[in-house]
Length: 384
Length: 231
Ligand SMILES: Nc1ncnc2c1ncn2[C@@H]1O[C@H](COP(=O)(O)OP(=O)(O)O)[C@@H](O)[C@H]1O
Ligand SMILES: [Mg+2]
Image (cartoon, rainbow over all chains, first blue to last red; front, side, top):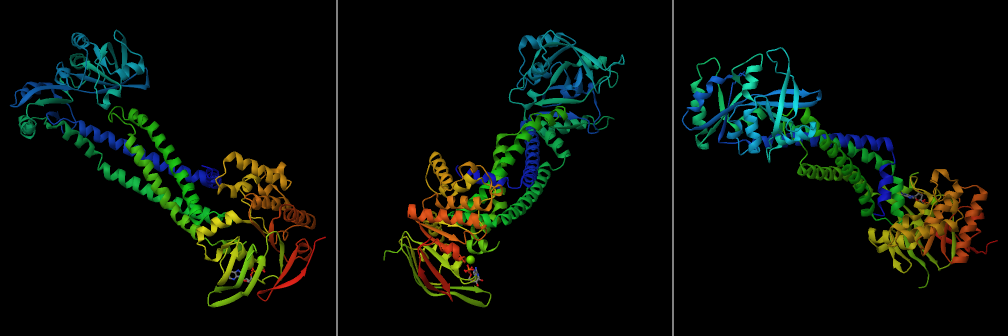
């Protein structure tokens, strides 16, 4: 520790240069942390996708007729079917985004292993036309509680009366233990209220959810459902929840490759940049290193000082960058309006980031450290 | 053999490209403990080369160099570094202070290589600053000090670890007359009052007069001048 001051003063010898180096490392690690965080969130969505639950959607992205429900329910192997839509609204200002999910009456019952709702509150929801269940996160964020009467300004759901304002009576909360979505601002509403009040697309749903008894039959049942509607104007695409999540991921492109390419390029640039900066810093201090060796610092000792300087800078900046990513990811989640639930920086990404920082710091300082190690006192002191 | 510094048959050649230049030829030297030796000679005569061999900064091409009881020509680079830290204090013509460190941090540098705790290092540094008359300049960076003051910081740094031997290469070469005599007075006091063994290179007769013995480097060998007593 007594050498820390030497390391620190060496580091800040050229303040502007150090700050620029610091910033470039921070930026690279913000990028690394954010992309890894997003990647992790997507992977989690896929991981949590169920294999015995099918989703039925319109491949054209349009809604599907509500009238499909009895036909889907009748398909052999289907144990239950429900449906939901989705719109986005805000409460008072765009800072308070709320994701509204109009759900079929049996939606919660069919997903009872996903959602936990106190029975009394579930009953109140089902018997109150304008009733709403909200996540505890939303309750906490907007200080809502059961009995509150709240207006939500829809961003993509007009009512027949020409107003985008939907009013709800909060009847309770629902939780999704173990799912990152529980931290989002979600509101469940009754489908009849939604469907009769809305201006367009009445009698349609965004998606059906179909439970099947045997996951091994997923492909066959999916085909059976899709065949039912193959000749109708609104065709369906049925796939497992997991495959659906994977499909959504694939739409963004090969995220893994994307993340690795960007992060790899950023780190490679960093390696060259800091490497040449450290080399320059070494050249400026040849004389000083020679003096330190004269005083009895060993070759390995001065090389260790150079490596430590780089290590302190690299790891310090990486930690700052990862911290920034940690703070920024939830904000990105809010911008994504609930489409990427659970955006956060996993501690393993933080640990890997720090590990990469250590390796980069050592690798970029190696040439300079080697030169310092080999530096001849006589030659260096002879030059003035 | 009681001499603190003992050189026997020392040859030093520099190889530069295809040219080989022998700077020191079969040189012998003994410096007893407690002596203040001045090495004189014209520029390029090999004074610095000789001092570098005595202080373990460089190795002879052949011959024996024993200082403070150690065959330093046979030590590995890292052993030699540790030996220097323990036994030698260095004073250079151009001070060679660390520009980023304050006077007290410069002086403390050699103590970082010892096991002394921080509080003890601080006390020793304060005492050394006092000794060279710079107690009030502890926090000054080298650039904020005059040449004479910088050289006094350098002397304090050279003394801080209580070395067996003090080597000075043209310590007054960059100083005005008044500052130079301050520095020489200080060195002489260290030699007389604390019994420090000093080997000082100079080409200035006035500076050499402060020493208790003067040798001339001439054609790669040492030639005795008269034994002198200063002032
Ligand atoms: N590292 C070196 N490589 C090659 N030649 C050197 C080196 N150091 C010194 N010399 C040569 O050795 C001779 C003596 O140099 P030096 O000991 O510095 O003399 P002085 O200190 O007496 O002026 C000079 O001719 C110088 O050019
Ligand atoms: Mg010289």
